[in-house]
Image (cartoon, rainbow, N blue to C red; front, side, top):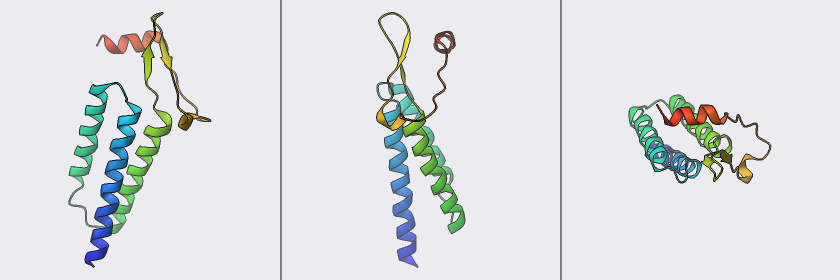
Length: 113
């Protein structure tokens, strides 16, 4: 039974690290977002530290995998270019995905709140 618990711990650590890597890559260059995402990921894992049910652990690991995939394929940082517009630079992981691109006005409004 101890080996099953050890395997589950290894899977949890792998999922945790995967989420952290995905957040770091998705928010490259935005220190505040990387720190915020990392803190939220840690908080969620800490909230579920005491889960013992195999089914619940599998469900949570599935959610972590979905989160990593979402960050890797659906989140693209927009950067302000010289002309004052925001520019997206999607990576190859984003190919074939549908991205919702906000207008400049909504992006500019976000920073003034």
